[in-house]
Image (cartoon, rainbow, N blue to C red; front, side, top):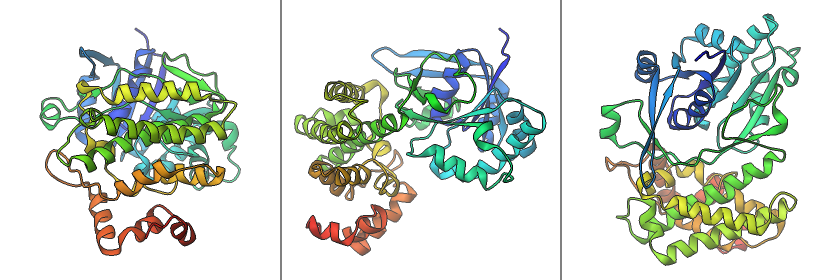
Length: 388
């Protein structure tokens, strides 16, 4: 098969390999990963293929072909790849994003000098206002005269695919192997593309992207987190999400919390969603959360408390939206308070480094420090809710 189209994908992690790279490769693109971890780069270049195991009642192995990689620190090579790309994507996690803007800008400038077509950049990150953030950061590295809005399509996404942490014994056997659930739909901002929307099976363009980003954050991510935090609080020995949701009272509390958040979306985006559609989505998510074959852990879903309790993220963000809309948020607030007691560890019995810092803050300065410094709530709101 001839592969005239090329995706340059920053990040060869779980989402990069199992989702973004997989979708584009299977639709006829060559995929060039830009990755900081040299063993991954070496393995991708040696094999030029890898396997994704779809975990369901029966496992399905998908072989992803025509892939290679460039080490992220080899700037000139990365710039050359961007300059000749058909499309670009970024999937490295929010903490790593500051590292990509300088090299992206250099690639854009080289494209401009070569009279290339505009470049669409698919932002495969779970974050609100991602396009505005990318535009602001790219402008810092580009001349004022660069026509960024004409030459670059900053395409926000809603990443709904669940990819668990790989067991250590499996990664030791095959560094490139990755597990994923069957769900394979990538929701993208229809209006953001500068070029024709690529013909990719699984791509779902939407007009009101903000609504779909918020649906992912305030229903999927919120429900996921609620399962982890309520499950850990019920039994510290639970390892998997499906163990928590097997407890009827946890299942119902998670569902009711998701429905409370769905009411917020229905109020804010009443032209985009119906309560029936959101209820169906919630029930589908709860079914997917219980996928035993996926082996998704309470640790993975709940860890990184400073990010997941941030003022703009799944729990505090939903509470802020409820305050804005003057709607109830008691169930969501209950989960947030329970989250402060989350101490789940990985398979080696270790907390995430960010969570070690969180625990230190919570134990030394208490709930007040979490609510103000991490969640961003005001003193008056804390007092009005009798939280201290």
